Length: 288
Image (cartoon, rainbow, N blue to C red; front, top):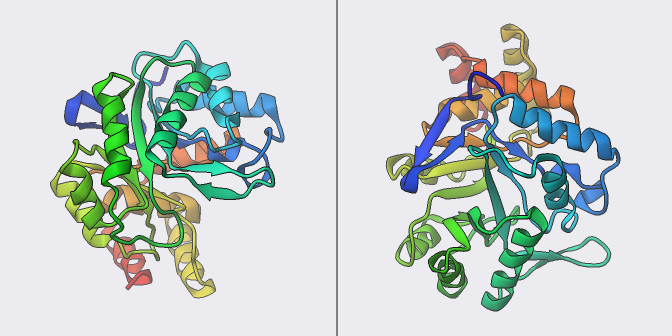
């Protein structure tokens, strides 16, 4: 095991502790997150090296594959290290053609939780996020029935902690009236900054904010600015984008995904990259 935790550790309510630099397992599945991995042995090696390098936070879901990533995680890491926390999500299923199908019926959400448990080889899940939206943006659609179904399983001991994915601030408030929320996972990066207020709120309420797709949506001009900053620091654009997110908020956690050990090492190294004030100013202007 590594002597240090990449990006440091974040302790949340209920003594839940996550490494701020996590690992997103989505890319371990085949093309379009569907079917078996292109390189099974490399997928296993990536998972094992992530843990060896101090990552204690793995993000996954049974709809990656489907079931492929969870079964890889089980094969690579079970029995799991005592400090490893697996964060999964429910709220979608996959069509036979690989399509993404929202699935928010309360009873089916509970079935999805049990499927995650089975494929991961666990009796209880550390964190389950309710996936309400993804790339299409968020709204204030009521989610009480759906979140309540997961809260029931928490009361039964099948889930330790609950979170949300693809939600608005109003939906976070709705969920908090039902059960504690320890994580929010939304689309957020240097250029996709609609959730600035939600990032700040999560920091104030000590909720982990997991931002996904740290390099998504960049225009050529924005990419050029990022590349120039990265070159001045002797880092890659990906590393700079990840470092910016870590410095953006004390409760930001990252879940970059990769199916390559070399790329994994590059991502982990970003946790040690400290951005000077002038670099932060240039990067902040990208999303202005």
